[in-house]
Image (cartoon, rainbow, N blue to C red; front, side, top):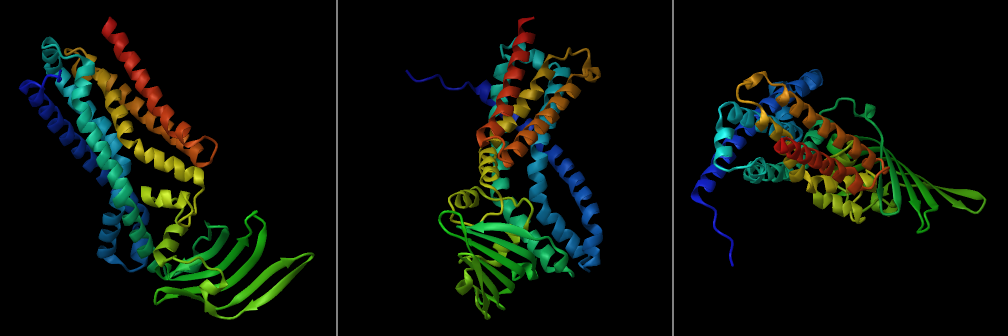
Length: 368
């Protein structure tokens, strides 16, 4: 026997809640994004002007940095937007009317859940597709306009069994200086070390200006002078492009799910440990459920007595619980990135604990 079709009144209610919730969430996200953009711009305004980029550089920075900020602002916007909507409905006696019509608090959450999950999927899509591309373009522009690239940080990455140390990157990723390659055998023992002064990318290939090779043979180390040649002849990994070098030079580069999987399978170079990649991938997949937790944390405000109005402190406590959830998730992810916790233990417990806590609170209030 097929389940009964949703009633027209239920569809109208779902449409109303979805429209009102999404509108408030997007408005809140826009305000938070503007504030975060201003703070980020204040930090980088002086370097942009020192590089003579002017107003065009400021606009370029703000546009490319926006996707990263959207991923940070959207979860908090969901919590604030849900609080605004539910407080308004409670103080306006709309919740009381819905209760009189037979709608329970869990039923209200189910009606709002599709919109929240859709926002979570949109946030995950932005983090997976827009943010990595925008941050990479911003990092290339930042490196290309740097008048003193030699002051940049060195970085390590691995490609297969080879560990590579790069002193600094210049020219938007087309020039690498002070490059050291540590080639290992299948057992992990050092087989050869190469010190290359400078690598340059031109016409789709890397070439080096020569260097020296150190190869341990028994009790002695054999040193060989390397003449200028294509970098592939000296053990440089194939397939690397300037954009890859900029990405590898970033502290914590945002990666798409496809790039994370390729790095975990050894098909792409990586500068982050495997534990951090697995944690980031699982957290990306669980983004819609994190948004659903934000909705649940806003639910207790429906129990505000209508006469209390905005004088109740319950919305403040709900907002604090949401911030606590974000901090707790961040702490677990930090442990997962360090390899202290496996990826499931670094992403799932926060969602489960806070969901159960809200459900227990709602059930306790309903029993009164």
